[in-house]
Image (tube, rainbow, N blue to C red; front, side, top):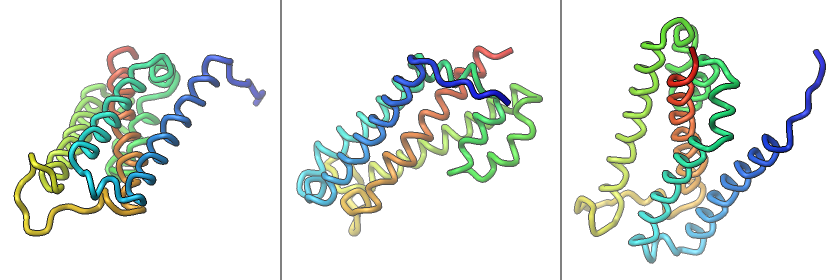
Length: 170
């Protein structure tokens, strides 16, 4: 098989992806290790999460996200979610055969991701949260602070890209 180097646009967009994930990861580490998240959970934690989710949607809807959606099979795009949904490995055999199966898989995965966020936000020590005796403390400590930039962000991007592929691929 002959090697085809990436074109300059793809290479540039890939570098932006690495910078975005690196920037989010570095910011999360600095905020956790320095105690900024713990001392000022509101508004820092919600702003960080909104930026994280917003940037995932922007990245997924960008030209790079479009190239990924057009350039890979539905089974590969669904299989990407296997880092969080082992069920994705089973579904990869069926998503290329049925767009309905792919839509169901993507919808359930996105709903599960939103449910995690729905539980985490009210469980954190924020003014908008449930009043728990032991609130959720993971975002305040390294390495747990990395869950959002290294797991939630790519999962969100993956769902957006798979949805784009489902809307554009025949």
